[in-house]
Image 1 (cartoon, helix red, strand yellow):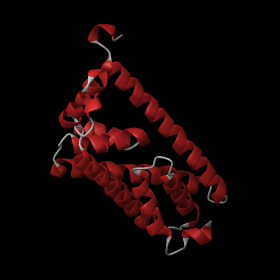
Image 2 (cartoon, one colour; image 1 turned 90 degrees about the vertical axis):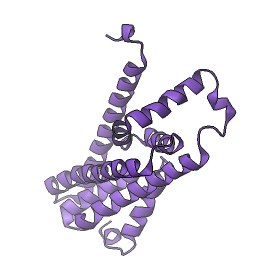
Image 3 (cartoon, helix red, strand yellow; image 1 turned 180 degrees about the horizontal axis):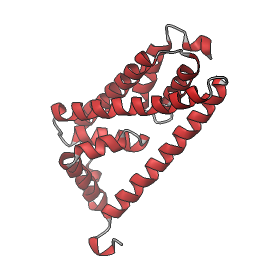
Image 4 (tube, rainbow, N blue to C red; image 1 turned 90 degrees about the horizontal axis):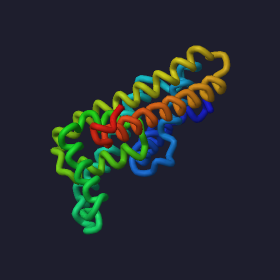
Length: 199
């Protein structure tokens, strides 16, 4: 693992992985970032001063590509999307992206499927890129720092056993991701209920 961390191809491969994760949620970009940060905390390699900006740049580029795909394709290409309850739901999502983009973009960065949907919707709804990019950049940087801090904590704590540090940091990061996802789903479900039904 240490030999791989010292490879000159590590950071280009990481960048490509994080960009790809913007479209394919099966790619384990969070897991890899956390694992590399844990290895850095335990052994000093790879450098966090490179790891964080590379991970953040990959997140920003990937999200921006989703945004531009959404802008190019739009919501209007498929007539079935404008009908019935689905059409109403899409209309609400589009309006929410325009009204509260910061909340959605920051929250969605930690929820894989939501991340894709929000970035595509931001482009399709016509959210100005000059407004979208700073939010996406801040969310991408925050995501990279968050994942690196988890890995770094356990890497420093378990520096004598780097592989154990990697394993524990990855499990903790996944668990925190599940918790964030559950909280976001509950808030979305609560917001979707009529006011009279909210407890």
